[in-house]
Length: 495
Image (cartoon, rainbow, N blue to C red):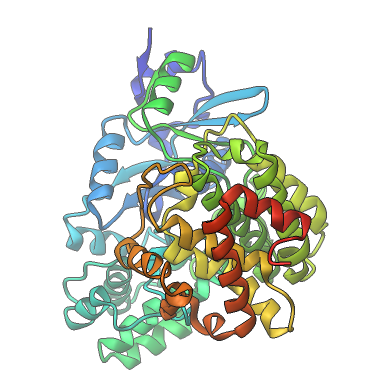
């Protein structure tokens, strides 16, 4: 027998799951968060739930917000269960459920004026976001804010009726300035190098596009955009997770979150209007996030990109299964040790080799149920952030990029649309149509895929990279994925 997740049922649910130690009625909103997806509910919301359980800072509860139809669907699911979430932490030999209650409301995405008014409320001191790498309007090749994106152009022309997260943030800041209210901190929780700087560039850049240079300067002088590094492997939710939550813990949750036990949050202590005492529950505050962030993005996120495409081409479903495959795990280990880790500068109080061993263990966790398809999605945004920077660093030093070029070639081969066995590949990428067109064109001209200049940028101009890419692509097509991985591992690829 199962119990529907709700505030009224927390007593019954406490028999199988940890529930909040605080009274929900004691919470007051201090944060509006855009992008109430699985990662946010397994990360920021968990840290705040931990803090509230100590009795601290109960005026920093979360109100959800969003701008997409997905946000509306999530709002409906969470509203039906009093904005509670079941978080199931999975590790080898362990599966534990907790119910978090850090969110107390979720704004209607269709009422944009209402969202603007809420973030203009003096009680809201942080506006945070988890909107994925693709939500920041960044030109992939330059890594800079793209002022020509149609959505940004539209918000610049009509700032009183914004449709993007950044347009709404601008409108809220404008109201606060007009009303003499201290501005809120804008806090990115996405896997983007310099995520605070990127967010500031988008917000101030949009203000300047609206011909409001004075307002843009005010933002630069008065609004905090802390950089942060966030980490927790959090797969997508599906019927498998919903059924497991009900059958194992007796909880009917419309959209539970499953995640690994490990979590990490490193952040700059730079806030406009105060912050919750998150250092009390494990958040690390530092003067410079960059070393931690670069290590994580290159080694973990780059590692995910490394195993995703060979996994898909070899018809492997789960991430832990790629680590059980000696050819894929061997490819990851050799690439990380010879090409990626040497590009990672020292990180305070961190042994990078130990960090990579931890990453290997996390990838191999069979309880997570993370999928290759999730890792392979949105490559047009992820490759320029997670793989190509290491490639560019090595090329700048005159170093070989055989393994990194192989990752790019695997991505190209993936976008031909069929695995090595002939199974159709389902893409999940906003640029899928042109990526596939370029991949198919590369059958006649191997360099056609590198003509995606907005993705590959100057890397595509390197003779060394082009040579290695062509060699790898030829091997993938002539010999197959497995034989190519083995050739890279034993050093015979293009020997």
